[in-house]
Amino acid sequence: MTLRTLPLTDVSTTTGAGCGCCSPSGTTTPAPHAPTAATGVVTAYGIAGMTCGHCVAAVGRGIGALDGVTGVETALVAGGVSTVTVTSRAPVDDAAVADAVVGAGYRLTGRLP
Image (cartoon, rainbow, N blue to C red; front, top):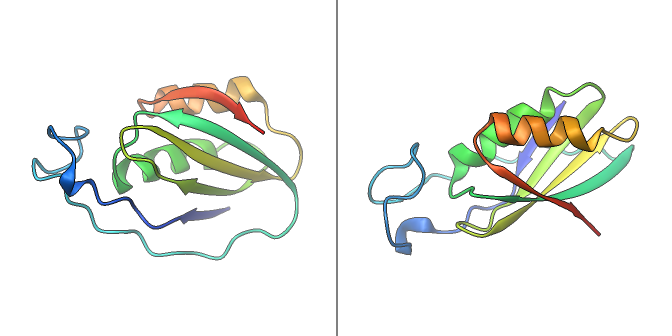
């Protein structure tokens, strides 16, 4: 499995304390990039509630643990709907993705075109 995060949005300018894993200042350190899988089925999902790299990592671990998933990439939109792109050997079960996202503490808004 490959887990890759895209550059994080600067959440230090957001109001409030961010998610429970963030410092009150809302600052984060971007995670390093990893290579992505070049083959397989690619499915994009919208996920609401993620605000930082810790959120991205939690969702990536949950979805990445699903059978057949070979890669998870996230385009973080702090406080909005982030795009999570899943690469897998075969189509992933949307209900399993939803369970993984909810289990990590976030909300799946649906598949993206």
